[in-house]
Structures are given as C-alpha cells and as structure tokens.
Length: 292
Image (tube, rainbow, N blue to C red; front, top):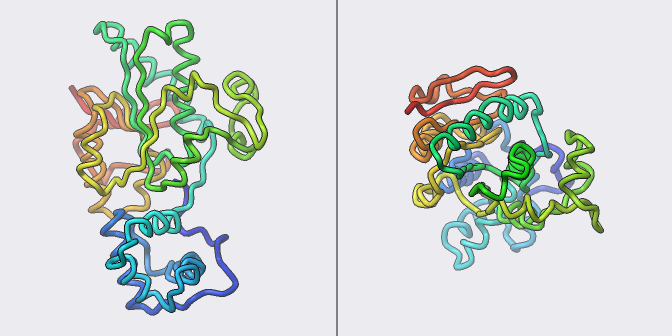
C-alpha cells in the first residue's frame, strides 16, 4: 500500500465536492477502513470518485455517500470504494537494506530458536500485502535460506489486503518488469518463469503464501490470523490517524507469539504509538520485539 489518492489519477472532468460532502465521505471511509484523509486532499476525492459517480448514474457526493450507506448493493460498492481510496505502489525486494537486516539477523535468529525448540514451523503475517510482492519476497528469502531443509518445515505466510483486486492479482502471481525494479536478476531467474504478460512466481514459493482480503479495522477478522512469529506491516500505518495506529499495532502485539517481531516501514516509527514493544536496532532497520 504505497500512496493514498495519487495525484496522477486526476481526471479532466470531475464532480465538485462540498466541504460538508467531503466530511461525510471521509468519515464514512474512516469508519469502515480506519484510513484518514486530510482535508488538503479534498480535490483528489473529486478526481478519484467522479468516474465512479458517473458509472452509477449519481449526480453528487451526497448521493454517493447515501448509496454507500443504504443501497442494497452497498457491500459490492465498498470494494470499489477501497480500490479508489488506496494506491498500491510496491515491488519485489523493496527497501533492500531493511530486508537484508531482516534476513541476516531477525529471520536467521528466529529459525535458530525454532530449531532449538524442536518446532520446525514458522508463521508470518503480511498486513497490507498489496499485489503480493512483499510476502512473496519473504517466501523467497526463506526458501533460499533453508534450501534443502525447506520441505521439513511448516511455513505459513498469511497475506492480507483491503483491496479485492490486489488479492486477485497476488493469487495470479504474474508480474511485469516494473515489479522487478529492485530485484536482483539471479533471483528472478531462479524463482520466476517468463510467461505471456510477464513473469510467474514458482509454485514452490506460491504454496507458502495464503492471500485473503481483510480490513485492518475489523477486529473479528484480525483474530482469525494464526499467531505469528513475525508480522510485516510496512508503509501502511502512515495512512491512519493516531487512534487507528494504536488500535492496529495493538492487534499486531496480541497476534505475535512471545519473542515475536514486528517489521514496519523504514521511515515509520512506533515512538508515539506504542510502548509495549522493545525496539531493537539492526544495520539498516529497527525491529519491534514482543518480549517473552
């Protein structure tokens, strides 16, 4: 989940939104998804939603908010709403320094601890997985690290995103050149097969990941995620206000097993959000540990 309401999506013709209409739609989005849109981005609502209003035959944003709340097709429309309110900007092996620190320290230490405990299993949660590049990246790191030992392990990577469209794309597992802009060529050749339309992830990597549409503002859905050794939530919480950040980070803490680790974006911090994690510095990143 890379950027919210990108300016590149501005359309030539847009329906004007009043201040009152903006507040009504913004509050509805916050209630449903926990995403807070600053009033400075009001004009981007006009650009993003105008085509959708036209498709539905609606005259203004008051009608659209009413449609979202009361129409018999409101559940289906929520999927469109979530597509419009988020823009997914990602790639394989994004933020390489952070991923190297994760692989060389956190992942290696976690696997070592599991071996010592006699439990060859690992649960990872990728929250805000977009079109699948992040969880597949982690799966590739695991496969390369474990090598011939991989079949002995029970690896479960639960990848969730608000967007149904992103989940569908992730399950398909076919990516264009753009997704590999930060990926070493040897990794692409090893774990992908060139097909019509791009490169397809290998079945061995694909089997390690389970994709599910999920709203991080839905407590019941969050509780269905298996207890995790590691949680990834990179470049997602920056779109939440403080209350929602604390709520989501609290859910991650509850989900993590004792000694588990939360990875957030390299430019993000839990400093003013939560004091329950122990920040641990590694070259290139800070990890947040749930102490035993």
